Figure 1 (cartoon, rainbow over the protein chains, first blue to last red):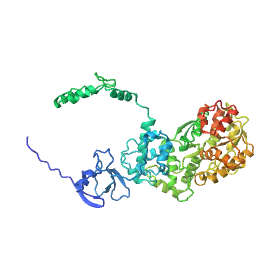
Figure 2: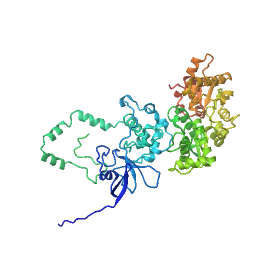
Figure 3: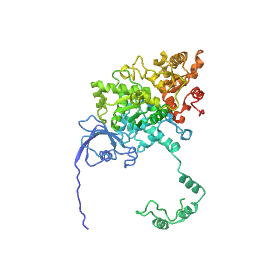
Figure 4: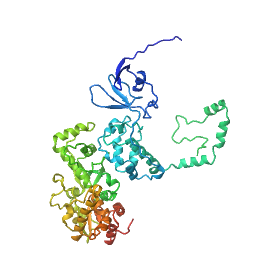
Length: 247
Length: 296
């Protein structure tokens, strides 16, 4: 084998990070460009995979008044873009004890009365990096439809950009989290098989197997793991494991 | 016939008795309806500031949704929603400059020029069903009931969105008459119930509500029918306060007109959610042999 050295030289483009100009390779994401420019992330970088919501970023392209948004870890830099990251937004988050609530719309209204300051301007939806229909779930909550709000807001990553653009100063993402919690705890039927599973665990059904695993050396553990029964890729919907110890 | 239907937020929480009873009537009258998808709050109050366009965004967006849904008419039940949507629509139709500003602001939506027609349940029944068909569909006519129809403000004012002659309306009386009731006309029928003053100045609101109830009672009404959740709150749910404060106050059963229409058309009484009305309202219906048991 011969070593082949390929030199890849990306074109350098100018971008403005917090108002200061930097030359960065055009292929980078905003997050990598920020690091390329010399900044070091201590917080606000999160998962780097587009799901945690820690790196929400606002930017503007030349010749446009529009403020755009995206996740720094997912958005590729463009020439002359002006940007800053907003890793945290100080929107109000009301305190409550979920166990003391019952899932009534009035509970949402009392914890977040700002809900009714919404004028349906839709700035929240426009800025959402996850394409959540934010205004629609706020509209659903105003009419007490907690379930719809929970479903519409499902992809929310709590980045807070919606709140940053809201003229009514609603903390949409926190209200949506309350809706999902109420929906999960009070409005969704409990899964019967989950109850059975918990009861099985509590009765000590798996204790012996766990003790066995604990006692294994590393090689034995590896072998046990490799030889475990797996669902074949072509299995139909009615496939069940031979050793059905789960239920 | 199929129509787009706009419920309004209150009808999904506090005023289920208005929505469910009205929809039961539509079913019995053979009207197909489709709830507007992705509807938003109507804005609740039409802003009186001439340049306050941001509060028109919500109602106009709802009207755009009606077009997206493929209908040219939208049916409302709550008087406040009717008023807000109809006035926003009127502005979009007639004010070119403000229309442009609003359309520019909502750059993610198609332009709107006021093409949709906004109707209220009352004028919809009058114009599309007709009193004769209504009469012919009755199972339990409201015979022997002396009802005072109360319009309030928002079905009649301002004149450009009035569902009837603004100064001498008859649509509500005609409707209840078609259901078999005896009509009690009273001057307070077009007075304001106190509206949102119940928040800022509850005493003043109670005073005008008391005047309206007293007026209806003085004219011989056994019960009042109305169309608006806020009127229902002021005139119905605050009656206990009224009785405590005013020596001359009399109690009056209050209904949404759709509840009595549903009863008259023979709908399942459960769909009237009478447990959301005052006790005296249920007692009154029981007294007329129109309600078998009191469910709450």
